[in-house]
Length: 93
Image 1 (cartoon, helix red, strand yellow):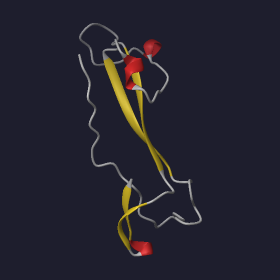
Image 2 (cartoon, one colour; image 1 turned 60 degrees about the vertical axis):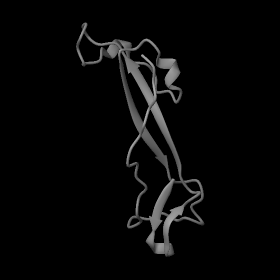
Image 3 (cartoon, helix red, strand yellow; image 1 turned 45 degrees about the horizontal axis):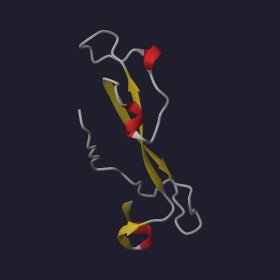
């Protein structure tokens, strides 16, 4: 993860306080061709996309844990927050 840490005078710093993960959830549509997930078929959030093979609908979320090393990198209320500019997922249909 890279983030500008202005408060530490470090541009494009690689911080060790944060853990970033991408989680996935699958579902089947409420009816064929729909993009609306059927709530009864929602899977638990997983970090292995291959576990969702066969699901027509897949969504993802990015999770930040900023509490890994708070003494070295004390994120406060006014601190810059890390961000994800893009996510690329390779899959086979």
